[in-house]
Image (cartoon, rainbow, N blue to C red; front, side, top):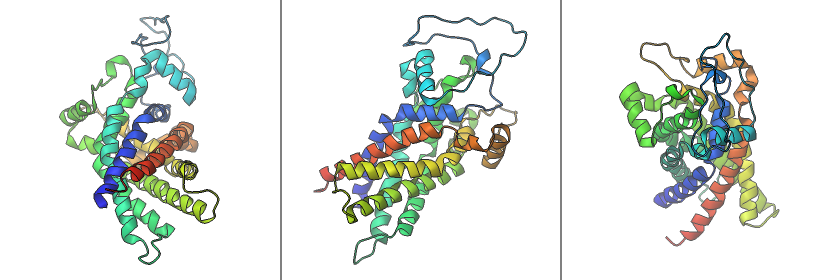
Length: 323
């Protein structure tokens, strides 16, 4: 039963992660808006990528008399359209190979381990698991899963964020394997676990809030007779779980994204010395609500991701119930 839980969780997580990847990419781009150490996007050279929608190109003067003003920040829909127009439709799936690897390592581990702990800690007579134990199982499973999947997480963030950099500063990783190899070669093996404390903390919060709240909401819906055990119950419980997870994890997610994405040049001082420094600089420069930057795309991604995850998981369990 233990191995079966890993397989079921892994299949569902990979499908959910790949299908909602563009929403996650938009979330990452929005969370990185406003970083003061980055070059002014308005001064970056214009270019025309493959699959761009517009036929006109803009030219930039070779010299500047004064710095150009910072372009206005845009919402998730406008940003998605802008990425498609300036970088090509394929750019919305930048880093999808890293997402698949991350789900294979991180989500397979957390889903399988949560299933094991849930069975182990359940009441032997009733088979029920109280909410505090569900939360504890989620915290443990999320922490272990994040530690396993951190290299893929770092690669995913960098590949998603690459298109917002000037052309000459882009990393241009060809795949998640190439990203991991290049990071190890130029920044050391420890760079693969950059921001790991944040990843672990976020994963513990997400897994505890997401998996525990889904199980709890589903139990309440069935016990109260509000709905029968079917796809309707799974959708309602999973969307509620996605909202809870998004609210709980967004501040850590913003800091994690910025720490993982920072570029550390040899001999230069890193933009952030750590998670706390990043949080303080972000709040000081952009205000406390900056920690909820990207919340709309977060919930827009977390909702569909969680729905696809649990609906797929229930169907996979149905298919594999005899194994």
